[in-house]
Amino acid sequence: MILKENSFEIRDYQQSIAETASKSNTLVVLPTGIGKTLIAVIVAAKRLEKFPESKVLVMAPTRPLNAQHKKSFEKFTTIDPEKIALVTGKISPSEREKIYNDAIVVVATPQTIKNDIESGKINLKDFSFAVFDEAHRSVKDYAYTQVAKRYNERSEHPLILGLTASPGGSAEKISEIRNSLFIEEIEIRTETEEDVKKYVKETVKDWVYVEFPEEFQMIKGLIENVLKEDLYWLKEHHFTAFYHPSKTQLLMLQKRIGAQYSKTKNFALVWALIRSAQAIKLEHAIELLETQGVNSLNEYFWKIAASKKNTDRRMMKDRRVQEIVQRVKNLAESGVEHPKMHMLKALAKDLIAENPEIKIIVFANFRATVERIKNMLQKEGIKTEVLIGQAMKEGRGMSQQQQIETLKRFGEGEFNVLVGSSISEEGLDVPAVNYAIFYEAVPSEIRAIQRRGRVGRQISGKIVFLLTKGTRDEAYFHSALHKERKMHRILEDMKNGIKKKEKLKDWL
Image 1: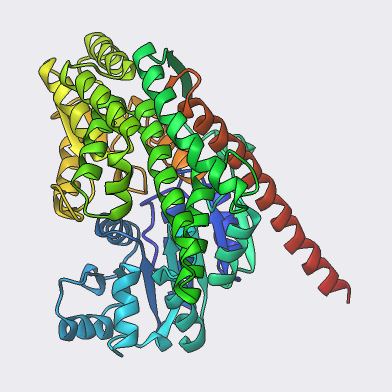
Image 2: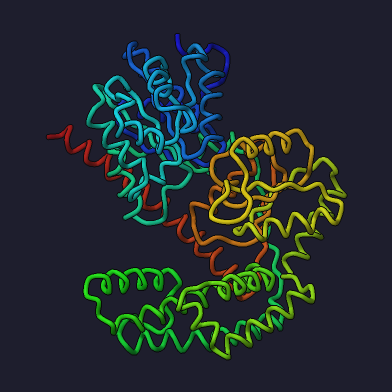
């Protein structure tokens, strides 16, 4: 028997989902922390028992996530640990080829597998099961889509399992995931369903509102005056359908105009590109001011001023923009912080005073804000560390080994507060957390669900949303909530639609 006896208790919903996933390509949508990985292990064991000479492929976007999958297979199965291989791009291609041949379970990032498919290092013929963790990434040109296609073509006994806490809030996005992974069945559960809720720890939500400072409002008004001119120009020249497009719509517009210009070299489009580029930057400036404060906005203006792009130089020559930049700089240099920063500090101090062993995770969108929060809390004597992604174009990052080590130290209680960027949202095995604090709201239902999933996994917890009144904080919070509700409706409709088709087939 491949599954270890008495190593875990299979919950009813896990057993039910595993039965479905053992027969058909299945997309499993489950809240974070209630056993998606175990379902993959159960199905993998069934496939290896059915096809004893076959192999299993497990993929996740990051090495820390894959390390967790390797541990799960070692913990819950009787497979020789030497045959459960964690493959990374740092291993030489020739060594990877040998590992693929010898291993029973291969755990790797999709990019590594994609590269080795293309170079012929891995033969998918003998893999009877493929797991796509964080399956919401299976869109567009992400490596998952290409790996799934090759796997479906080459495996003698293909079976696909997609795992996610949220596939997205639109029918188009969910359909794209289904098509990319050749999904035939959908299994969805929420925290409120009878067979799940008894396993979910109580999570209390709280909303803490702060006022948007008058000096911030004045700067916002000045930015909006410049922005208005660009937006009206775009509308009156028929590039937009209305006067107040969203930032997302402006980004799409800029992409569309850029593509048209590349084809036609029509000089008339250049001015539209300039206007749309400036509008996007001004929209982002307002978002930074509302959700992060003048320090982040000051750094943003500094980067634009240092840019060599003609559009950036043109914008910084505008006297109105120069006045805005000076006001922001003065406020930043005088030590003015966003009121959420003060609220966060007071909240953390109170919570730690009540319980010195408390574990708090703080989510923030921008690395600069993550560092600012850490420095502020450390000055108050609060033991705080950060969790950020690997180094990008600029600045310092954390290696995946450093990320794993930081989470380990957090779990062992070496510090009270972990401040994380988006890397802390997706799938990482965050230790039992008492409090999760959203420094700002996110408009993405995927990210909102993932953030919430860090609490209530092992112990009861509380989620605190810091919201600035009358700003994008509030708008983004309600947007993510609306998208999440819409997502559940779409998934249920799709699931019911699949069942109806099956019944019709049986009848025919």
